[in-house]
Length: 101
Length: 144
Length: 111
Image (cartoon, rainbow over all chains, first blue to last red; front, top):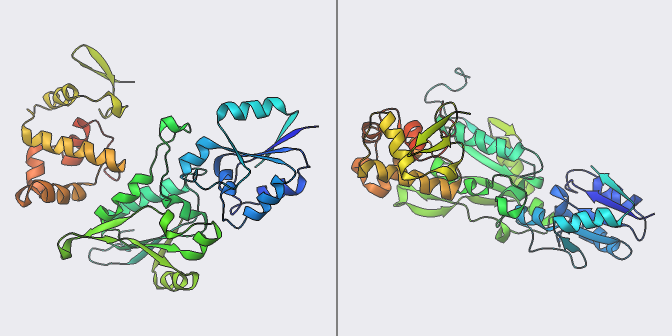
């Protein structure tokens, strides 16, 4: 089953990212939204964890939420930026959505 | 309040900011309290720690065009100097673990009235240890 | 929601008469509000109104009165940088009244 995982909390503030990375399977999709977009920044303490996930999962970030926060220029290589339409497509392409809050 | 804020009594007060700007209302609330509190002529400083450093990142853009439809309050930090709030402590370690440096922060300055309105930086980069010392000197710390 | 009628169009305001949407503002609205307060706007008034609008555009807040006072003194000359001058122009208060004419929200911390 194809699952889209969404993470909307800063990895520094909550362990939603850690739980998501631990419990998402190879081949699934992960999308960072809201404060979750801070996880997509290069050079952070979590960048290696994200790079490891990119090896066997598809990782996306919501562009408008990055732009709002002033972090659009520092995205880890291999993450795909999507807009709201892309968000909708991801939901439609997958069988279910697991929101890590 | 009246006893604690007697006229002429100046206290060292710090606003401690630890939350990212848009996910919760803490950052905006803190900023509003800072601006209102500025009327009391106290010795005020702000500290940005943990996710609080994201509040003063350069290049934020939350206008309606950007999609999230929230008021962009990041320009308001640039007005703090007008309110005589000139000490903004930023913890280096919090920046580093987020892959950030001082160059990623807004250029926050104040004009020194006693020095022919010379423009001076408001941001003071401090280590964790130095910040602990500054906090220790405070009489009041407001936590957001 | 209350409205005011300026030259044939209705403009939404809050219960204290401040514009609901800053984007609705034009000079006719300012003049209309001043007229309701029995004030005629002079170039000195417009200096302050325009200054407030520029300040809001840059910082996204209406400045506190003491901030406005200091800034006016710096921009328009020392003799204007005092509350006496500003209150003479805006008898209901440079914060409250001038910000209302300028289409801004009430200054933060202004009761």
